[in-house]
Length: 317
Image 1 (cartoon, rainbow, N blue to C red):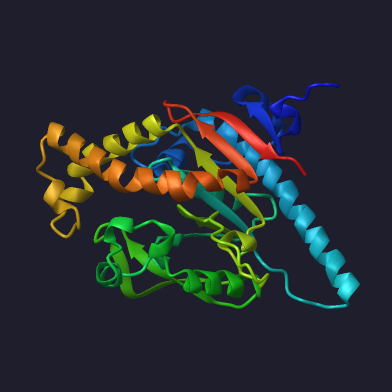
Image 2: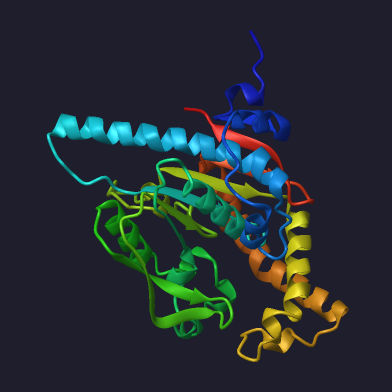
């Protein structure tokens, strides 16, 4: 009997960086070098070649997916005899702490907003749906911040449901990384975008299925396309520590910063502190909650130590 390899039965088609880059074809570069610099996070090394090789092919693919979804929507309208308003196409971006989710989300927003039909592209992070620190303290969850149980999941699901129902405007709470908390009575309004990018640690998390067969919504149920950013654990740790060291002289130096107490740490103490936080919290969350969601993504971007995407896996249709 013929032996079949794991690649033969994988739900993904895997591309090397060079093979993926050829799929850009004639997709134009619409970003300037200065814009790319502004879009990247401080510890990322995003450059024009990364945009050209990875994100322009992805932009082209998404343009095809969005067009196909719009055609399907019109076909369903014809079938049902309805005239519902077009709802936003939602893209989820997930992955570990320090893997570069924010940079990817911002680059995609910038590229997609410059398609020829000039769609309106909004971006939110799920950080705003974390429970306030007062609640996390009361429930003993401060060491579990970023774990699924630290989010106000019903509020996040209501937000996404309202978006998909075509309601407008829909409000999302705002999170401050400076004070490490949700800002009371501050909101971002999402008003009928063509595309909404939702970025967060656990956006692909499914949770436990009910034994009685009742319908239980998950955040990813509202996504039309999902992206998982991947890297090896030791690489993620080195990026996290590097970012921590940089933040000592930037955000941590602000007296208002929740982490101001770390601003004066020596290099050795800062490395030890960052490593301890990583192993105690972020690594546990990665192994228990984030990494298990990787096979649920439509696209996986695998990064090397240089921060460059070295491999792309696209789910087969």
